[in-house]
Amino acid sequence: MAENLFDTADLPGWLSGSNAELARRAANGWLQDATGLTTWPDPVPDRLWAWAIELAAIAMRSPDGAGSESIDDYQVSSGGSGDWSRRAEILAAARAAYNTGSGQPVYSFPEPDWSWRATGPRYL
Image (cartoon, rainbow, N blue to C red; front, side, top):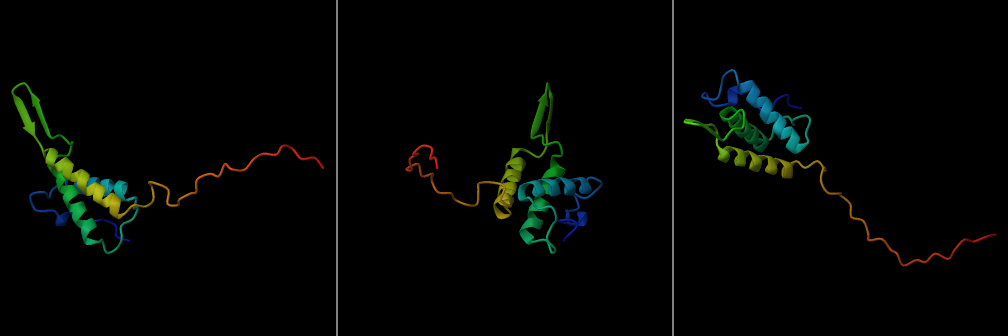
């Protein structure tokens, strides 16, 4: 099993740095929660790797999850709602691809048959 989904060197240069490890851990946690996987396959499938890189980039651009904030004449914009909607899309795709059975029951059960009648106690 792979130890990490990707190396911090895989992140583009403008995303690398001291926060790269934190971004990797955030992407790791988000994907583990969505997929239910506790260890990563080795080698890591391409789409899982791509999701992890993109989620790490989202985490790097907006670590606190703020889209924008405005206080008086001070305004800051970080990441944006587009990043967080993309994050939701990625996690939904990961959930669908790696569903570990934490949803609806796998088996179908017949409807109960209430056509029988009670006849009362029987004594020997």
